[in-house]
Image (cartoon, rainbow, N blue to C red; front, side, top):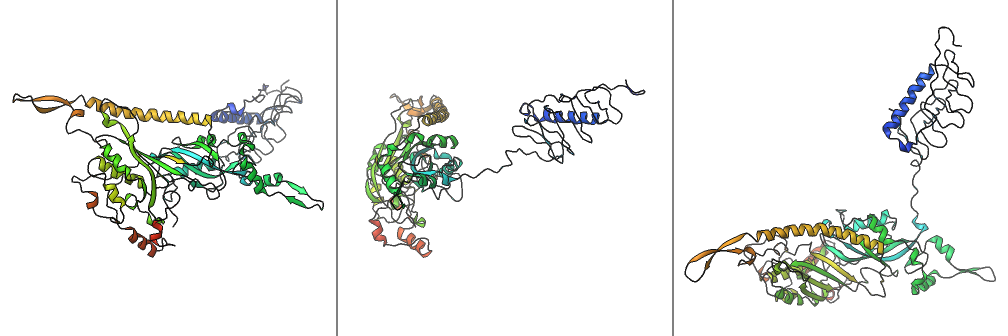
Length: 585
């Protein structure tokens, strides 16, 4: 019976028997749930207490409600500040002195650490801090990530074949004043995938360095990458693999003799098929997952430790695309033939003497001007693409673009094909005439060739399919924009020009004429392929002011201590350098 003057308070069950998994609750829902439970705690503090196992009224000053032992009710311990689930329950508990809620051991709710600093999720949970509380921390994030141990993995000397569209980059090679280079993006991907520890320890070489805006279809680099294998062509096993795999032979005295590891490597290099190549890391696949879409790895190849993408290259091929427009491609072809052979190209490049390049003798194996495709269109052959293709053992800084600039002058009829011969005669013309080189975006590093004995490319069919898909999407974008401009030209071709024509009777009359048939022809497709502003009156190359000569530049930088010559300049002229573009200072 209830005491006189007191109304019997019907116990209300607090919703603690079951909580939704934290993953299913949003932040707002969790905050609302915590506030509801705090209000219920405050209400119960002024309520009654049930006798053990009973549901009767609580005496005055009771601290809360208690369910039967093992029940699903709530219990407030003496002097406690909150609610507690009975054994086996899955509700909430507040630890002594705490100011929050505690999840049961299965991690289905929230926990308030001692001192009531906030709410924390146990493993697998998610929680919130009340207003003004400390920021919750997940147990998993409190641990520091263990640094990657490269010494526990073997390395392998490999070659990678790349393609990239260089229009949005400041060149291929890394630079001090920018990180927007193809090489920077490449090493970001190599570091992110834990394939290299750093560039300096990777035995890195590149076949060639392309300038700002220049693209490549067949760039090649060589470097050491992390490997899953302990044997195979180019494999350098880890210290653990060496200790485990090195053969030990005990003699009668108990002395341990070790087989020289270099002999083992030599045997596996002679028989590379012995290595389990199918267990090797999928270099192409994992790199393309983190590289920008305009930089792709096409293939990889295991190579010998002494292989260098730069010095092992047999020859390099460049292509420069241009519209035929009104150019005399026949004269351009005859001029291009003059580039063949071994010549001093100081008048057809940018002399990079400050970086130690003092020898400008290079060998051009092939040079020609030819159609890039056979496509025609309704506006005539002026819109057909042609290309200047040049192959050589090595090239100088801006050499191909300077060669192309001279060919464009010949194609426009401003120079004769014989101007190439005069520019290559450095005895008669030791100083370069001042002229602008061709623009960068149509130039392509098409191929870097190697001996089949040195390089056997390995392709990843799945990665190749993804690359083709990505390039097709780019092609769709660019060709659609190109066709929009082309259709504008077609539409404008329907706008007629009025010209005087003599029909023989002495009366002149105006007749319509499409602009594509007008004389002189309106052909400006190739006018934007040369840098700088074109002057109204043309001055021939050999009549223009000259740049500073090679000997003067060498003397200048030698006095400043930038370079030093170990042999006389005359001897350098007869010794073509190895590699591409530059020599060491």
